[in-house]
Amino acid sequence: MHDQLKDFGKSIVYQENCEDPGKRSRVWNHEEGLDMIKRKKGTETIVAICMNFCGIIPATILTSDDFVKVPRVRFLKMDGGNLSGDYKNLFSELRWLSWKYGPSELLATNLCPKNLVILDLSWSRISDFCGGWTQLKVATRLKVLNLSYCRRLTIIPDLSAHSSLEILILEECENLNWIDPSIGQLRRLKHLNLNGCCSLWEMPKLGSLKALTELFMDRVTSALETYGKDWSYVEVKAIMDEDHPALGTYGKDWSYVEVKDIMDGGASTPKSY
Image (cartoon, rainbow, N blue to C red; front, side, top):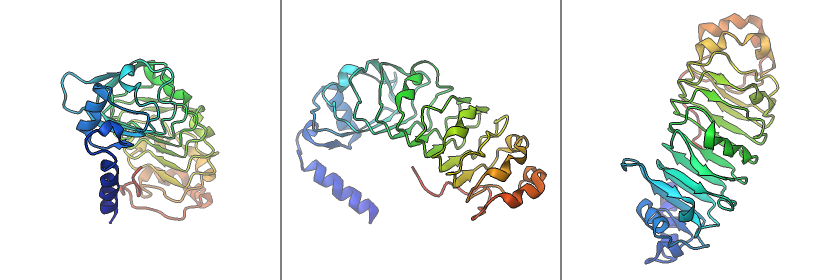
């Protein structure tokens, strides 16, 4: 039923203008989206665009001029590719950026998605958030950050600018070795997924995260061994891999943890974001 509703919705959008995708409100077809952007055929009515650059060699680089005709875009989906040029006064209404398989270095300047709510950079080649990626600090309204399967990622930087963050997904970031202590200031964080972060030196202190209700941490052995008694302050509904030997070192401290639903180690995230 869900797929049928999606197809029905796309059909309605398609009928807005069967001949010219640039005059529709949403361009879901990847080929039409790229053609529209490169030929600068977009209009102010467009609020959603999908494009797929995976497998294209050399990598596709879109410039700021390519987006001038679509100033009201609120949802942008890009698989692969890169952005370059000066993005001042662009993407001011962008709410959702899905950029899977993104580059290690962001080439764009003056990127200011200050109204961004959902950011999905999963499977990207990011190793840290230096260089052009630092511009994302302006996204102070961010609620969802998905960095899953960013296998080159080594560091999660200062997160204090994202105080509205509710969901942080770091699943299978296998080379991630350090998370900035500012994660402990995210008082609205409800969901934290660290599954497969097997290179973490130590577990970040989560004791002050009173809103946290879902914590996934399967295969984070070395980090768990450093956590100590701070477990007594963590209120969670789901603790992953509860039978791991490392957890036994906390002894009676577990009696203070409000665990409502112990899930089997290795279970996947219950909901896709």
